[in-house]
Image (cartoon, rainbow, N blue to C red):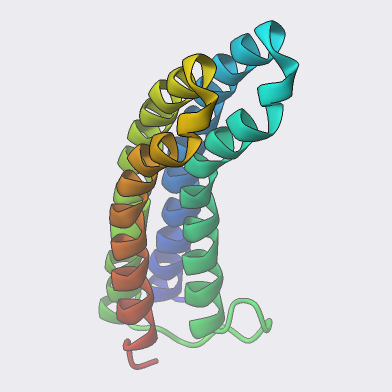
Length: 157
């Protein structure tokens, strides 16, 4: 295995680790708020569950980018390409947008979901409006996902 392949593998790992950490935090804090609402009114379970799940997408995006990167360099097929250091670093750099933005947006989306859960607790009829707030944070995770996918796919291997 070449050093370039090691860098590519590190990029895939960072995409999963950082975006997963952001999602874990976001889903965790939203779950705490959702649990409080459900203890008071179990009929709101479905609405608060949806809001809790929103920050989980960043981890999925990081995993998707990692699979694309690992597939691109042949690590999933068991026949890794002989990557130069420059190519490996390009794969690593391509994984960074979703890694960093996934970490930050997952945390902030979780905090926004907590506030949206508070809206649902007091005014369940405002669920649609409440969901828009954490969904706006999602926009930036999607943009980072797009950049990472386009970058990884356009690296010549």
